[in-house]
Length: 75
Ligand SMILES: [Ca+2]
Ligand SMILES: [Ca+2]
Image (cartoon, rainbow, N blue to C red; front, side):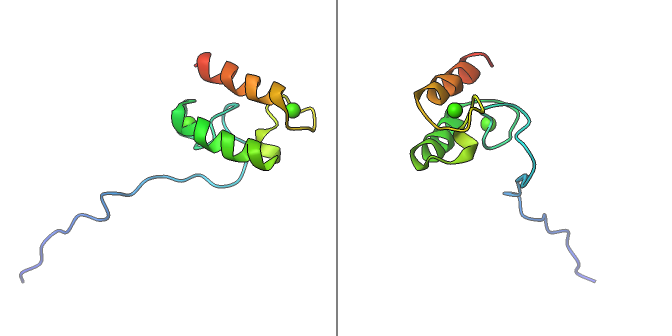
């Protein structure tokens, strides 16, 4: 028959969409707060996005940056 098993996309990765992050600061939802999340956080923080409101006080400011650093170092 000539059929051969061809592996599917080996670059497949799970990308979660929607819902709250499993933990504060885990922007890419891989279960850990890492440098990759820092990049995502900074992007949201500069834009003043709600996802950067780490302390959930309704504003995006320096306290949220410190909150992210706290989540990062507490991993
Ligand atoms: Ca992460
Ligand atoms: Ca805030």
